[in-house]
Length: 166
Image (tube, helix red, strand yellow):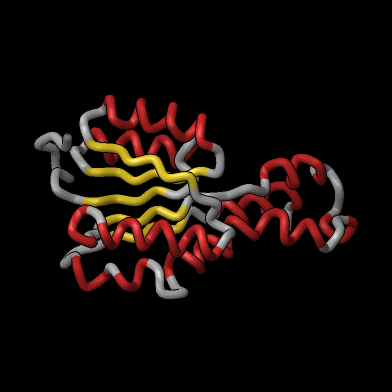
């Protein structure tokens, strides 16, 4: 259960937290005593990450969820609304599935990339941000908490800028 850290009693959601930056954010939130819901598309890496996050002191709840799928995001926020008193204090939208697509296009001018490249790098990223923030998801939970922190992790624009020097 949650320890007595600065975020004890707070409920956090970090999307795309089975590895990388999302996992690192979840680890720190847990260390501060928060209850941390983490999402990812694959169960096994998510469960391993949840074990690490829980070991830091807070409570961790792994939820398999593809942030680009409207019905999965809706189910995630329904679960949040029913659990922990419907509370959400911190939302970090970190999910991003464009790494492989970007690697495949590495070194090519952006104008030589197929139009499908846009979808590959933006579906979980931009679409996931939209589905979490709007579309009747986290907005339903806002009145429950007096102070909230919402953080977008903008992988997309910076990654494109760095790779294509735009």
